[in-house]
Image 1 (cartoon, rainbow, N blue to C red):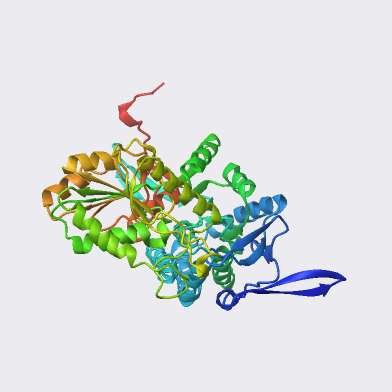
Image 2 (cartoon, rainbow, N blue to C red; image 1 turned 90 degrees about the vertical axis):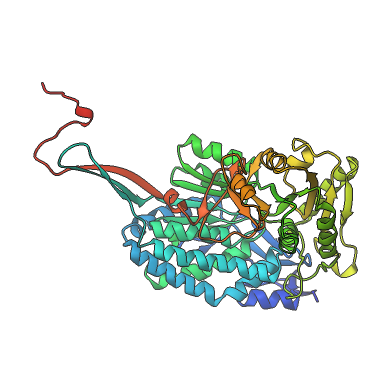
Length: 533
């Protein structure tokens, strides 16, 4: 229940919000006030005197909190303090940095349930996914602890006697992380853990619609840093809007920008960072496809496609948007899939029984409705869904029906196939042979995730080989959504070519030097060049 009461303060009426019990319980676990404006800047001290942004619950529409963002001067100061913190932190031995990351891991794990609930409250994903997102941060900290003792360079053989060549990684500098609303904790975690292991300082600009998650995470991380005598600005925070992001992207004090968001904004970020010769990691659109062969185990494929398309209400960058079914199994597959869709009951994402939460914003509902209108205009068969939920208890939230559609055209150049819609809409087509399905999979601009369902080793070999899928994540008998942290995460083509999390992603967070060392009594030139006067 949500109510308002009015009190008199200094002779004027002031409306005081009284949040629902569910919201108050979650916020109180982090000491987040529902009545006072929160400070949204941290650079070793909490501050904030800029514009006010509002955190709104997508489930109920209630205002959770108001946050004071960074003023232009506070933003400049935060960048400078992050630079100063980097100069201290880079000199701490990497294994010691790993010890600190281990403590951050423990602190996060201790608040895993509470932080997962905050993700559900503010972003809208269901509770198990919220907790799973926090677990990603915990896992990448584990990974980075080990990495802190294994960030190796190389020794390269020299052609010159008495010489050795080393490839040496050193800390890079300041890393700006511009994260998106759909993973308000994990994406920052991927970047922070690797950045800290490498000896960098990080400044985080979260999505303006999920400031509370960023404040809660920063409170946890900063407490560990302060307990270890490390400047808090090693993990700084600046909430704000477009101007804040543009300042970070354009700053010469920022060596690396990690941006997660739309393809359109990613292009702007890429150009602006390149214009000052900075480094950039881009995680952009994902228009992901699952391909199901006639020999696939449908008892595995159907529920995996269901999760890929409906999980997080279709708001993962790896959500399944396109489904290509072999004509021999298409009818049976769709019958099974529709049964699962009809079993979905939308509701409060904080309830353990809920599988479908809301879209994050009202604007996202508009995008969903526009996409459904377009499907209707091209005479697509809408098998299920295609509208908002009309039940009274859902009317204040951003709830839409998961939708399965079969467009008349199968051309991947058509708008409906080549454009990512960040909502639970699954477009379906049938094919006759794997080569045709691979061609459709690869024909779209994006290249994040893809999935093939088959038990034929020949199909698997083709799918993962040079003539197979061109995405950054190429799965077999695994859905498009739900990656682990051990491998590098990222996509190709207009997804941006960026890689984060595991694998060799850490190599982007360091400054590489090739060092030739002469320990002989002579100084010969390479390639046998003779330059004797």
